[in-house]
Length: 66
Image 1 (tube, rainbow, N blue to C red):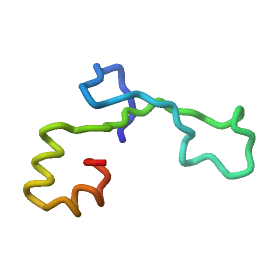
Image 2: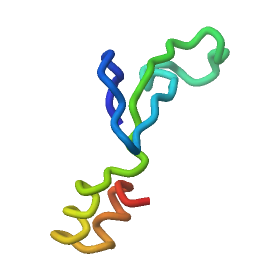
Image 3: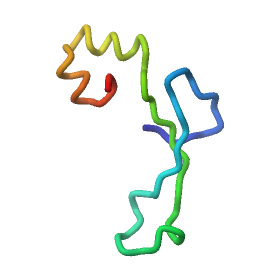
């Protein structure tokens, strides 16, 4: 995950709004600071390279291949 900084989304990515990790528990959701982040759902060839180099277990463990 990375912060969205006005760049174009690549195939397999989507922008979502999340609550900042610095927000304390118990605060109303509407009062919490929210940030846009880019989530890579499918990294395409990058995922394939990780799987080939480190195996499926490493790929699944890091969350990059589903």
